[in-house]
Length: 208
Image (cartoon, rainbow, N blue to C red; front, side, top):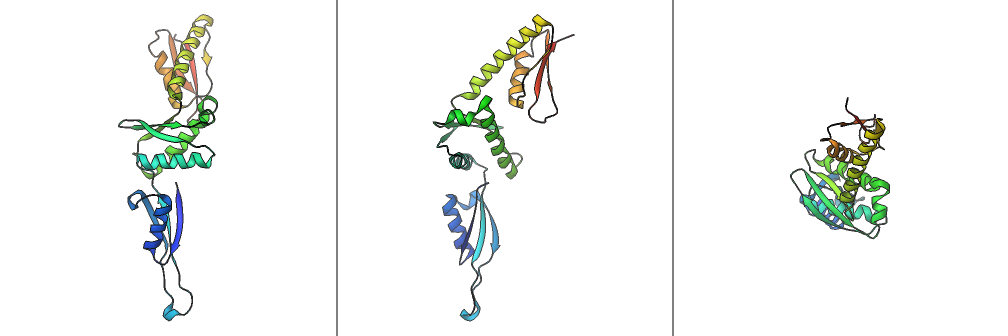
């Protein structure tokens, strides 16, 4: 969560300085008052400034986009993020960057990790918040097509060899694509295996 601390003569002035730095309004933040301003008695001694800690709450699309843009910038990537699609339960954002390949990472692992981090912060504010999905260079559709072809090819191999096959570790989204692709195959069955709560392997085998 993006956070700044500010000091000023009054807590109102400190909040104003924090909002200016965050580029946000009061409805977009949470404010923690660390110290009230205190004037010295009769001008003797030192006066105490007011001190506040202000958090940018990631609970609307503009704030989400601003947060991800800032995070990528700190990672060394310039980017432009736009809303691609919004449904009742999820928000799909598209990242445009000359470093898209690095942001995606091997098998999309960097993109997935970034998405995971954003969702942890996003749902920390409210568990009912929509799931955030990140995409770049239409990677999600390309990956989905690749996984569908993989599922069909492995199913053919299972039929031919009569032996089960176990795929590499995948996140829940990718495993779901494998399961759905093969769910209507009359002779093929799939199941997820592994102790990892998130990344598991898909086992593809013949029905008995």
